[in-house]
Image (tube, rainbow, N blue to C red; front, side, top):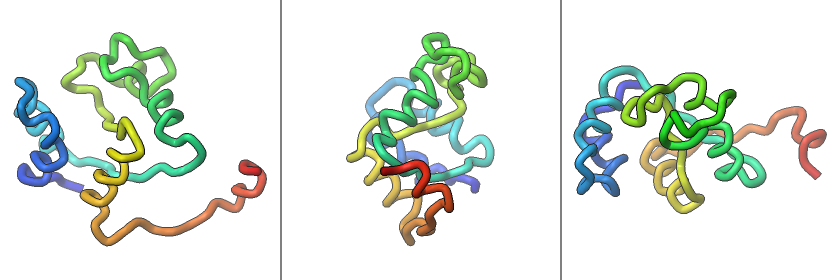
Length: 111
C-alpha cells in the first residue's frame, strides 16, 4: 500500500516532538509499505527478536534489521513495542479488522 502523509503523521504521532519525526514520515511515504499483523504466543517479544534492535548496528545477523538495514533512520521495518501499541496500530492500519484464519499446523504448534 502507499501511505499518505497525514496517515504517517498519525502513525508516528507519539514521536512528533522528536527531531527525527519529519525524516520518519518522509521515509515511510517514500515507497510502498507491506502492512501485516502477526499473532501468537508472546508475539511482541518474539517479533522484536526477529526484527532486531532499533539501531541496525546493534542488531544481530539473521534479524531483519541486522541483515537488511544500515542506518537507524532507514531501518526497513517497524514493529510494535508492546501489546498496547499493537492494539492502537492495528486499529489504525486495519480499521475494518483483520482476516481471521488459522494455519492447518496450529494444533501441531500450540498446546
